[in-house]
Length: 160
Length: 110
Image 1 (tube, rainbow over the protein chains, first blue to last red):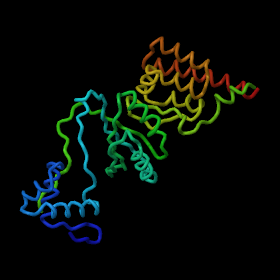
Image 2: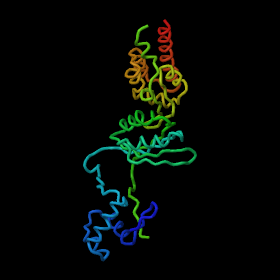
Image 3: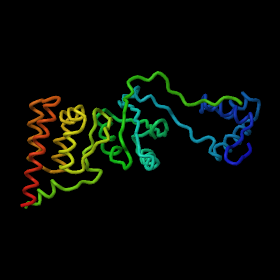
């Protein structure tokens, strides 16, 4: 693994390991090593280095909240902002626990797109009315509540 | 002049302003940072926004909790019970809030 200016260059074994971990992060070093014909200690070293370099950001658990009876709604909120304030608005949104993702997009106007969760519609509205609308630079807000989700995956890396 | 008049007519912070939405999470970009601004906005904002907030009880809640105007709160509640819609809603709400504002303003001037 070589460090370039900013991007970190990975060799084919690193890519293989990442691919394997994205499929199942609970695999043992031995299982991964066996799959790619290397020792488990090699897998351990490679994973540790990728963790230290921030290539592997975290390991997490995807919980199906509906199965354990937790009710919530998800919404996509589009915030139209004054371009001078958009950075601050995006930062403030990123700090809120109700906001899961924040991105910016430049079409005809500068937009901030955020994924928001709340227990119900009232809580969602209160959050937007009390915490988002008052932020300096917010011009208007469009919110769509997600009623049905067909697919949700993380971007999977492919071998180069 | 009672201090309650000054309180009701005061200029509010962004956090305490009234923000006009047309439905859950859809902010029009219009807000009011005083009773005076609120009166003017009632004349201008999308009718859908007035209907949305009146029937959710948002107007009476803001007037009661932020402006702390009990009299206006009761008048808005009474209007809600009459279930007006469309232009009638705008006209009646405007009448109530503008009358109240003018009364408070004249009390303020003494």
